[in-house]
Amino acid sequence: MNRINQLFQQKSENILSVYFTAGFPKLEDTVPTLQCLQANGVDLVEIGVPFSDPMADGLVIQNSSHAALQNGMSIRKLFEQLTAVRTEIHIPLIMMGYLNPIMQFGFEAFCKECHRVGVDGMIIPDLPMSDFLSEYKEIASRYGLKFIFLITPETSEERIREIDSHTNGFIYMVSSAAVTGTQTSFDNKVEYFNRINSMNLKNPRLVGFGISNKSTRNMVNLYSSGAIIGSAFIKALQETQDVEKGVKLLLENLEK
Image (cartoon, rainbow, N blue to C red):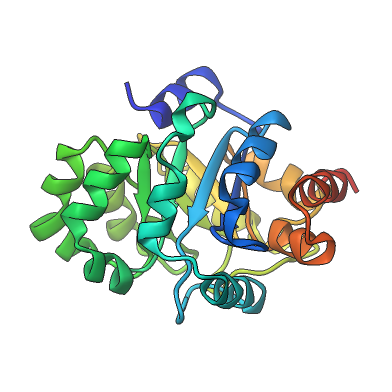
C-alpha cells in the first residue's frame, strides 16, 4: 500500500505535514531536512521543486525558490540527492512543483524517477483536472504515484466531487483563495470548513496556507485530518539558516 494511504489508515487526526523548498537554505540541505523533520515527529513532507514563477506561493516561498535556484538546485540534482533516501526515511514524501519544469524534464521521466527514489505522490497546482485525466493520470498510476489536488473556498461542489472521485490519498484544502503565507486566525473559515465536512467526501483532507501558530493549527485540526505548514517553516529556515534550528523554531512557534 502507498505510504500516504497507510498514514491516513493509521492516523486520522492531528497529522502534521511540512513543506520545504529543496536546495534551501543550502543546496545540500534536502536530506538533512527530511531527517530532521522525521526525527521531530512530522508525519508527511512535501518537497518543493523550486521554480522561477511559483504563482500559488507568497513572497516567502518565492524567495526561497529563487535562492534554491541560485544555489544550483534542479530536478536532476534533487533526484540525485534522494537516490538513497529510503534507507532511512520512512514517512510519506510528496513532490510539489509546477508543470513547466516538470514538462521540460519529461512527465513520464519525472514519474519514473519519483518511483525510483521512493516518492509517494505529487502536487502540481497549475495542472488542470481535464489535462490530468486525459494525459497524465494513467502515467502517474503506472508508477504508483498519488496525485493530490487543491480546493479553495471558491471551488464549486461539482468540482470538489470530481476531484474526490479521481484522487486517492488526500485532498489539499487551501484555507483561502490567496497565495501562501501566515495568518493569525482562521475564525472566518468555519463556514467553509463546515461546508466541506458536510459533503462526506471519501478522501481525508489536510488544510494548508496560513498555518503558523497553535491557534491556527488547532482550528484546522478540528475540521480536518491535519495541517500543512509551508511559509512558517521557510521563515524559520530564513531566520536560522540552519535545518535543525529551523525545525526547532517551527515547532516552538506551533506551540505559541
